[in-house]
Every structure is written in C-alpha cells, then in structure tokens.
Length: 356
Image (cartoon, rainbow, N blue to C red; front, side, top):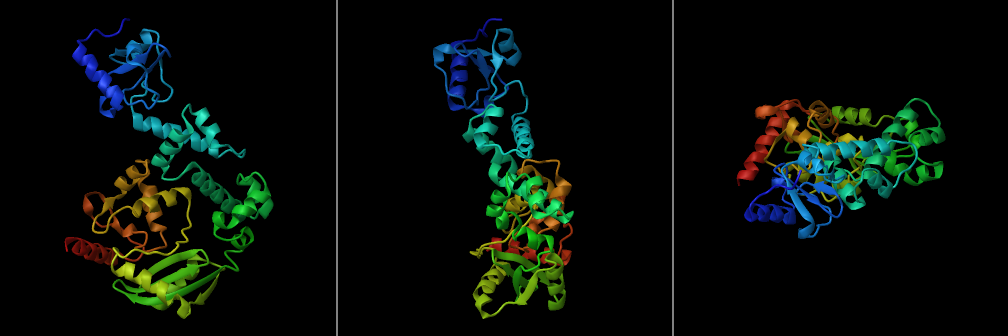
C-alpha cells in the first residue's frame, strides 16, 4: 500500500505533531521512516528523522502492509500507551526478582528502551527507582526467610543478595536493624518514646536511631505504649529524656498544623507497595482528600484498591503520612486506625485551615 494521499496542509499538521511529539495525535495516524523501515506514534521519543524520509499512514496495519515494522520503543501496535508502560515495568520487575543481579543497562536493553527512558517510566509507574524497588523486594524476601527460621547467610542469599558481604553493607537500610535483631523480634533495637498533648488528643512519638518510627494517636498513655510495644516486639523501649523535647515539639506542631513541615528523618518501614502508597499519600495537600481508587491510579495500579486500603491501615506515622485524607468513593468516611471520629475531626480542621 502506498502512503496516504492527503493535501499538504494535512501532512504539514502531521509533521508538526511529530516534531512536537504530540501525544494527543496518537491513534490518529502513524509515521514511517524510509531509512529505518520503522513506523511510530507521533509522540515517539526516538531520534527525529529528516522530513524527506518520513511517510504518513492512517494506522499501523497500513504501515505494516507497506513493509514497515512497529517501533519497539513506542509500540504503535499497542492501543494503550499507559498499559504498554505498565507491561514494560511488570516485565522489569520479574527480571529484578531473579536471584542473579542485573544492571540498569541490561534491563533497558531487554526491554528495547534506553536506560534513561526505562528509569523514567519505571519510577512513573511504581513510584520507586529500579534500585529502590529491588531493595524493597529483597527486604520482603529477607523478612520472610528469617521469619521461617533460616540462618542469616542462607536468608540473605535466598533474598537475592549476590553474597553475604553485599547484604551486610545494606543490612540496616534493608531491615532497619541487623538480621539477627530482626530474627529476635527487634531485640536490642533501642526506641525512645514520648507522650504529649496535641490538638488530636494524646499522642506518642517514637524515635529509633534512624528517625521518627511511630506517631500514634489516642486518649490514654498506657494504651499508646501498648500499641507501640505491639508494633516493635522485642525492641528495647525507653522513655525519652529532655534531649527529645525539641523533636517532639516539631512533630506535635505538624500534628496541630500540617502546614508546619517535619524536618526530621523518618524511619519508614514497609513493603515496596506500601512505600509507594505512603509516598502518594504525602503528596495529598492538607484540606483535600482522595479516594482509594484515585490513590491506586496515582501509583499506576488501578486495580489495587483493597491493597491501598491495607497500606493505609498499616501506616504507623499518623498525620505525618496522612492516611486520614483517603476516603471512600463519593467522599464518605472510611475506617481509621485511630478512630473514625478522630479522622472526621482531622479533615474538618484541615478544611477550615485551607479556607483561611
């Protein structure tokens, strides 16, 4: 089949869309390059061809009939660009889950994209870099292996660390503690805690050596301490002294007014998926809400609505990670770890602050 016969104005518009990499033109036509034998979407990020080497076709089938093959980068034969990105990232995740280590360059080569482009689409879908995703996945595998009684070396190798030396270099970043401490339920981990008043009632702020590891809300200090002990079984819990006063005051100021930033390191422990959800929650401005479905869409997993709800329920840092800003479809309140009534009050107070 010969190229489409169209007036020069029409072709000029198509060429302009190609030059601007206009995604809104995707699906309306494809362009083919004589010198490469490849056809692409208008939005393709590949190096731009010379105008005299470009031909336009109504769709991929017409271009294929003329002897061109679909571009491996923009995949014009795939009708959904978003799904295409998700599929590439899913394939990358499967490769990252293999025991043998793999470089960013090797991943990108297997998926037929540049390392820069791969890094960008991976983060846009998962919310994490490939390296951070692999570390979180290894941490989950390591926790599972240790929980089933494996020794440290076997667990590290089973989790995908190439050798025990590479594990020990990343031990604290992976588990937040050494493997032996994790195996004993956090034994020997020192956590300091302080209870204080806040606009949301009593709160408990806990610190590990890595940063703020828990912010709990309640009405009774004994109940708050019991909750902390259940979250960190085996850890050494000790009341914080006067050296924690300034740090606790900063956290409480944020609880009372979320516009006051918390400029303290956070010790956030969770699975790769939970980390993505919590990162998305921190992007929700005070005074606004999102549905669980909207959060799932924002992390590139629109079907993971229940899993998003589970990640919200697992949050240990009240208000700092604002899981209270996630509601049901239509704005109805859902459950909250620290009580639905407290959630309603938090949202009402933030909405009032936003109006000022």
